[in-house]
Image (cartoon, rainbow, N blue to C red):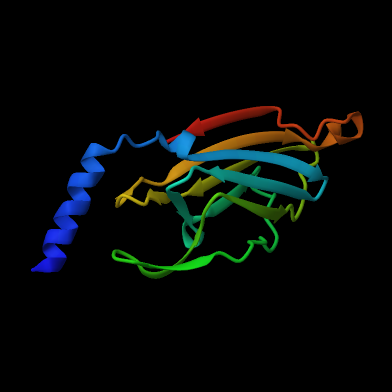
Length: 151
């Protein structure tokens, strides 16, 4: 009985809190570190967290496959929906090796993630896309050539 009342209280509290848009709660950025590595960062707002096992990364064109993706250690959390999960707060940096760069040097990354607010509200998965031109690295251009964010 107490658990039900506590859950109902959390729902009421969540309704009173103004939640951030997902792009503000989980700010995505990425940069080309070198011709074989992309660094992805998420700046996570206070009171929010991302799930480690909900990250998915895909490179295009098709012959570009990510190597062994490197995640930092997260914090273990008991989630009422998902059980024992690893989460990130504040920020997370993920290193994505580029297995085989395309011949024209253009590569795009699609990054998917999912997170929640501490008030008990989870967001649907968020997808972010960014494109790089590896050939421009020599010209001090580790910046993306385009970026597109989708919910």
